[in-house]
Amino acid sequence: MKRFTNGETLGCSTLARGENDVPIVYALLLAAAAQAATSSSPPLAVQRISVAVPDPDRVQVTVHAARSPGVRADLAGQRLRLGAVPVPLDSPVDVTVGGGETQIDFEVKLRTVPEAVLGLDPNRMPVLWEGFGSGGAPVLAAGGTIDLGDPGEVELPLAGLYRAYARLSDVKLTPSLAAVSVHALLSLYNPFGFDVVATGLEYRLVVGSQAVLSAKRPGFRLRAGRRSDVLIEQDVPFGDVAGGAAAFLRGEPALLEGTLTVRTPQGERAIPLQLRAGM
Image (cartoon, rainbow, N blue to C red; front, side, top):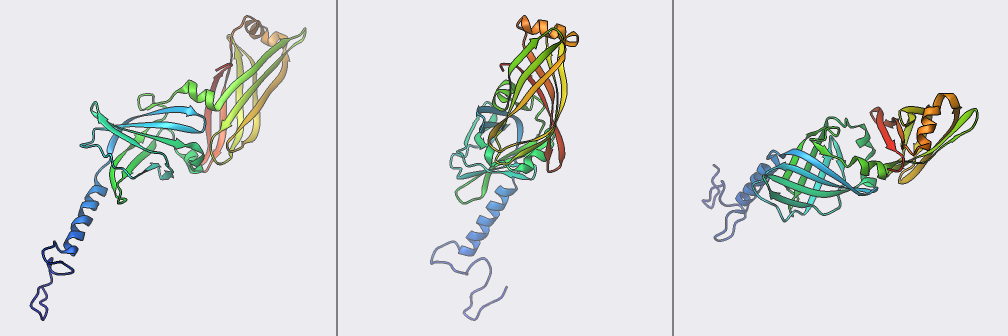
């Protein structure tokens, strides 16, 4: 240690202290160590995620994670990362502990989601949620890798999702002597703040046990925050779809099955469609 001319020793004892205070340098070192320990704490393991769709522009997310040793009621902020992509969150967060788990509830406004999210692998998506204290340091975190296609890991209201973002309506099969005129309207809603480019749509329209129409459509653009209508209209030979036309006249529902292919920053991605008229 270095001894000063006034006889004091420089260690963890003298810089900027009051009469009976803990030395400020020592206090700062303790605070830094505490913050480092909090920041490096491993996140709670995500057990499952529940998603609700109150309206097409926002989703309510509930993260079910391992039990936390304590509830933080004084969270001043939060952050969500999907893979390496930060997703803005400006809604309140509610954290509760009970039943052997920590439950984290927050809302995501879809117009704020970055376009890079489209390129993530939906079957292996890393998720990290962090809550921050008033000083900006992380005080609670939950993370893991989820499979959006596994209902045991992610609870998605499929019927609600289709009603919000993809609808099949105005289905008509009009028979004549030689042909059946097939008409339907596929409506797609883009809730994001950026345009989505569909590079192709492949589909078939089924009534009863018979496909009455199979077709491919070239690319089109889904405008941000807007609903886009895709008109399905074609005359098909009566003999090819007589069974489907008869089923339609008996009141059996029409189903549209197909694939919408969209462009992402990491290449094209196929989105399956399975819609029932009137859903």
